[in-house]
Amino acid sequence: MRANWKLLTENSIDGYHALTTHATYLDYLKSATGALAQVAFEGSARDLGKGHAVLEYKAPWGRPVAQWIPSWGEEGKRELSRLYDGLLTRFGKERADRIATFNRNLFIFPNLVINDIMAVTVRTYYPAAPDFMNISAWALAPREETEWARKYRLFNFLEFLGPGGFATPDDVEALEQCQRGFRNSAEAQWNDISKGMGKENPSYDDELQMRAFWSNWNEHVFRVPA
View 1 (cartoon, helix red, strand yellow):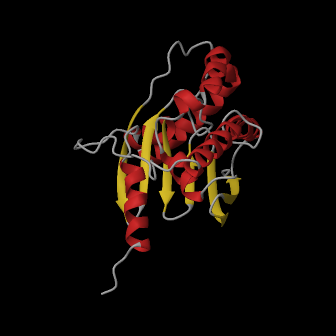
View 2: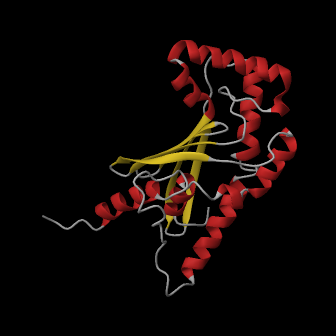
């Protein structure tokens, strides 16, 4: 991607760009499921210390871990009910519901992201120049998954997070446009990521998790010698 690596950090853990940047995917999802008259997200963000952060939220897409959508049919409903029952047995209802129906974007400072969303993806990225980075991503799979679960996990991964999916090309274009803007701007030398600063409990679509990264990055880069 022809953009500064820190922009992908922001993109990976901001909780609000999906509704606009990935509007095509959400339109497709609504038409494919026939049950999503409106897209509703809810959740929270947490600063985990030392630059690490996570946002956790509910979202409308299916999760092969145990959240069914109508387009997966009755076979999918049976399969995901079986998986959910297993979660109930192992973890109890409260934790099982959290595992099955909540998404998580976990950031490990400085350049590791684990997206537990419509597929579990591990992403790393390294700068090759101030305006260029190399990115690697892996889709994780449980050892015991069935043929049905593998099919829909990979489908979910490729249609959104894959290199030709609904999301990744959007993000590449958006961040490369941002990089062009920064290159040509003499006045705005930084991003304003103050959203939610006044809240005791920031929402998933505030910017606490992004400030966690930048505060730690700033401390490392501009540390005053003792």
